Image (cartoon, rainbow over all chains, first blue to last red):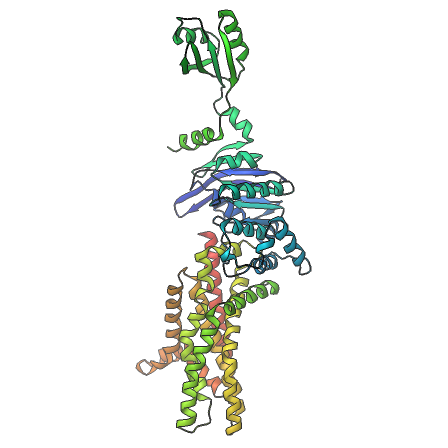
Length: 317
Length: 238
């Protein structure tokens, strides 16, 4: 277990920023940490990286406690804070050297690590420029390079792609995916396609509480408890949708049948079940029995957007 | 305390002093002001003395110390780089110590050119070398206190101007304390006298190096840096 958060709470005065959350990150995993703004993502990451201290609960990174072995934990972790703060008056190499020194990289290793990071993050042309002159995309790479300068086992990235253009986002994302092969990565974001593109697993947090934790595919399946199937059928003239709907509802465990579209006798509608059972066979049999032309039949995947919105707005009150 | 960490911070801060106009402005303005006092004494009154250097420097430092240190921590707070620093395997006291030493080093380089006055005067007349050494030692110690207090001033705010004003306010009180003693009863006066910076300085500037004065300076610096460290640590529990 690479990062183990148990019963973590954090208060700012009376306000509860993080409320008794527990989750774990396995070694070599890319974990997406999702939530609306102000949900507690940054607070949690700041506690893992020793910037804040927990009000209660414990966090262990590679088996070391963030409170009692804080310096050890900070050596193991590479951190890219939100907004990517940098010293704008330093040039790229100076800054990487400074970061390496502070991370305790041995003197003889520093030039080699700097070369490697400049290579990995594609900073070759920019290495002698002041950070203040760089574009946002390059600054983000400098931030990432500095976060990884000591070859940390755990990388904590707080909104690593915020403020980048679509091309830069793709670049940074693929960089993170490459890194994720050898490292444990915790990545916070509120950009959902990013999670789908990069993460193995997601933890969704809302108002300081964890509302979902699991691989994306599991979340999509489990959210409703039931399944959603979309059908498109051609029925003989004169049969209305209500008549079709009554027939469909005879199948056990059907919750709702709702029309999506109707054109030239072709009816497109969705069927939701109350339990996670596969009723596609029953639907097919029904069509054969009634002589309906089955044009389409597929299981609908709940998109991550739907999951996110449902989880983070349901529990809002 | 990890010396390598302190050294890294010190080197970085010195580089940013000398990469920006700050260091040059401080050194040039200080030398111009001091040079005016020094030469007017030399040519108008025909006195071969470094007394003006030793008397004027603490006064100029009232403004220079807060100006040199005002951005040291407040700027890191404002730009968010403090978060980078704090989350590195380095303690708050190492950060504060490194930054203080950087400011003190810059101050040392500011004083250095005034040695040319000493050289000029030894050529022109006879100087009491003992009191000159004492005077410079005193200046370094007074500077250390002013700078340490100003580092604390910079740690409590993210606004450079506010940091400057807070630091100026504290060092001004420390500086003025022994100048208002006539108005106070003796019992209070002796305590205030001990706290005042100038009282201890005048001892050392006469060439008398007393352990009580050294202890005063060391504890004033230590206390200021301790408070600055505490301010940074408090953030973790915010």
